[in-house]
Amino acid sequence: MKLSDNKATLSFSKGGSSIELPVYHGSIGPDVIDIRKLYAQTGMFTYDPGFLSTAATQSAITYIDGDKGELLYRGYPIEQLAVNCDYLETCYLLLYGELPNPGQKKDFTDRVTMHTMVNEQMQFFLRGFRRDAHPMAIMTGLVGALSAFYHDSTDINNPKHREVAAIRLIAKMPTLVAMAYKYTIGQPYMYPRNDLSYAGNFLHMMFATPCADYKVNPVLERAIDRIFTLHADHEQNASTSTVRLCGSSGTNPFAAIAAGVACLWGPAHGGANEAALNMLEDIQKNGGVDKIGEFIKQVKDKNSGVKLMGFGHRVYKNYDPRAKLMQQTCDEVLKELGLENDPLFKLAKALEKIALEDEYFVSRKLYPNVDFYSGIVQRAIGIPVPLFTAVFALARTVGWIAQLNEMIGDPEYKIGRPRQLFTGAEKRDVKTIDKR
Ligand code: SDX
Picture 1 (cartoon, rainbow, N blue to C red):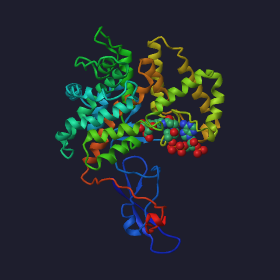
Picture 2 (picture 1 turned 135 degrees about the horizontal axis):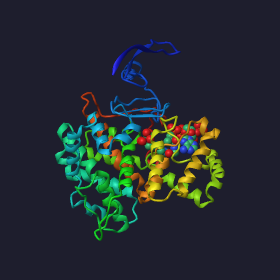
Picture 3 (picture 1 turned 90 degrees about the vertical axis):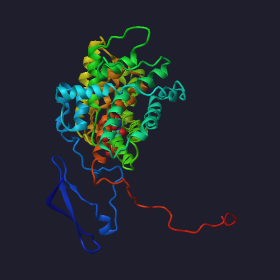
Picture 4 (picture 1 turned 90 degrees about the horizontal axis):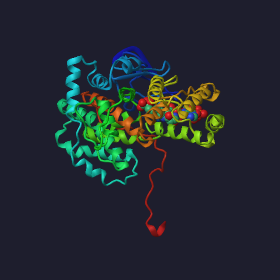
């Protein structure tokens, strides 16, 4: 970041000396006012619950322009990456800052492939869960449990150790998600296959059984690979900020990523794809397209507590570019599977059209986000609704690791420790119980 010749001056209406705060700018996007010395100079904190106006870090990985609806991974537009690259090329880009050449891609792919198996002991963790456990409860446990196998070989201050942990996590997430799925349906786990692509291997582990050959459908393989790319990273979202804060204590990367999985589960965040699909199914059950007006009325009634899941975003005040790409992917998959008339897809497109013409959504700049269509395409591929967020976690693991490694690799980083505005009881003495 570069010091700007612009300065911020803070003065107080009740007098006292004003202070000057430096302003920094990055390569693109808003400048920042450096308040690191504010408390020392004024004895006051800033107040920004939800971090609407707070940059918690500097980063060179992902840039979002919410007004333009633009998403760049290391400067490359998501629209170009989703068409010209596959997920492992995108992983390489996010981790190392440049797209791989053919030799680098082969080496990276081979390294990931060699780490796709998990320790045989991992299957015994699953046995502790009920068969109907939510996959995200299982994933939070399994990813955290990886620490038990690698904790002693992960010195996060050693860049080589950090890189191996990154490869291990990217490689093992599809295996763990598929195991979580197989466990809930009582089918045997399928071991990863080194002769399949990253996406093809995931489909094989999910849908193959030991009883018959399974042929990967190339259209579905390409679609799931693109879904991974669209979810790979997204600046300082809630789960990425969780991973950074957790990792800032020096804990091992597996524990930090497990914290990210737990945060992503929330319906306001990664859990929205599951919630959006359930919302569409409810509308469909209660009358479908004819009932959209009634549903929108409920959403606009604050007391209903009903939100249009898959709509709205803290940063995008325009169409989420990932939602457009997800809709295209949806089209391709439904056509390939002969489901062009899928009622939920038609319902989603009708709901989007009505919402985008409604003053309530227009005035609040609420547009479809990545979660609005992702459930429909995953369901068409055969992924069960409760597993959608686990697939999101699989794809986002590379973003979490890239952001974590960027933080740990910065010699200036400190443990994150926000302060507060205290509004509780002032100091008082304890009365013994006979006097209470
Ligand atoms: C993801 O941060 C990221 O980058 C996340 C993500 C990523 O890749 O990591 O992009 C992934 O989490 C996408 C978002 C998925 N969540 C949902 O689809 C859940 C539904 N969306 C909302 O919960 C909401 O839009 C948020 C949480 C996404 C954003 O909330 P904000 O920025 O805190 O905005 P807000 O809740 O203050 O809403 C502003 C207004 C409010 O109305 P008013 O009080 O001004 O009258 O818009 C309304 C809200 O009530 N509103 C909605 C709405 N979203 C916001 N009303 C109805 N339906 C919605 N979906």
